[in-house]
Image (cartoon, rainbow, N blue to C red):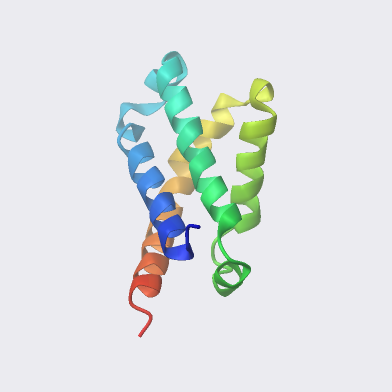
Length: 114
């Protein structure tokens, strides 16, 4: 069973994989189905890892919008054919950069709790 530290690492790794393609911008994202699938997949990983974090970790970090992250994952998984690619890109461009330093801080905390 994966622990919180591993799940936080999963989130950070997914963020870093998303970041590889953000500089290519919206035009490439809109035209490249493989890139769209890549971004959606890694946002799903973020949401799934967030969903499986312990309640205590999530409660100790209210600065992270856990419910919204998990809801986004649920929409992507269960309403895939109703997917709004513009919303996905906005998440990638706006929310992911804000999330990364917060996740890095949590990772540091769980790796060195002293």
